[in-house]
Image 1 (cartoon, rainbow, N blue to C red):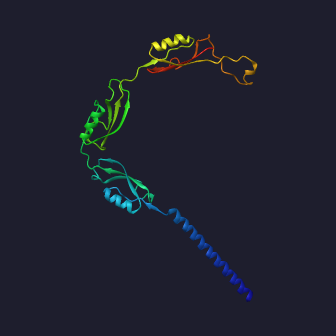
Image 2 (tube, rainbow, N blue to C red):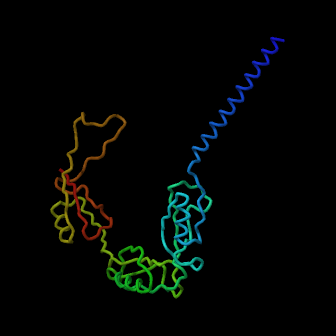
Image 3 (cartoon, rainbow, N blue to C red):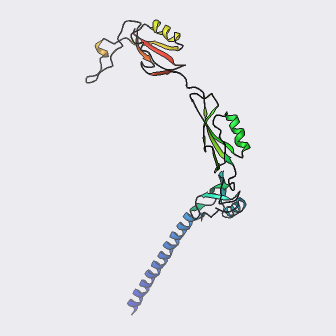
Amino acid sequence: MGFISRVKSIFRLFLLFGVLATVALVSAITTIRVTIHSGEEKAPSLVGLSMEDAQRRAGSMGLSLKVEDHLFSNKYPENYVASQAPQPGDSTKAGQEIHVLVSLGTPRVPVPDLVGDSVRAAQVIAVQGGLTLGDVAAVHWSGVTADGVVAQEPPPTAQPARSPAVNLLVSLGQPPPAFVCPDFMGMSVARASNQVTAAGFTVGDVKVAAPPQSNAAAAPPAGTTSPPAPAGPSGTIVSQSPAPGSKISTGTVFSFVVAP
């Protein structure tokens, strides 16, 4: 009986040790999960709330609001949240920002026709109509003087605007004239320079090509080829930039390489 009692005691000790080990493992896993998910919240639903209420609700969860833009809306009153990101229920953490679009209320102003006006005039008209000037892009545009509006977004319409901002495309004036670059190859640099300056362009660098290497020591390794040496009478152009036939415009600067 003594032996059996000792065996039972040992078995109970092993069983107790196993239970304690299991409890410790479960506790460690729980601690890790709590650590990983600590501070996590579900993003609250702010759409349809006034900005004051939305800020209060977000603040109570350690979150903050960032207004990305304003837009007109038939659904939400002025100064109410019309859209949000992250969406309600999405995972978020304390200190994170919730980006919102805020309603300007029911659209009330039509989009005026600003094409043909100057940027300054377009801005005045937009502001007087209850709109604002948004992005302004500029391009060269034939037939339209510099600073003239050539397109707008949204386009002019009698329908009320959805966004208060009107984006404009503005002319930089006539496109600069373009020409085809002549071929000066084989011409003396003096003659080419005279033609370039007479046409209203500029001559930049004029370099002398390195003379070809003729000794055997300068030969390239077996199996390779070296570029051909510039050919042509001394002082004639063997290379030019821009290349012949390419498109050039006012202000182009030419550079030449001449034969040694």
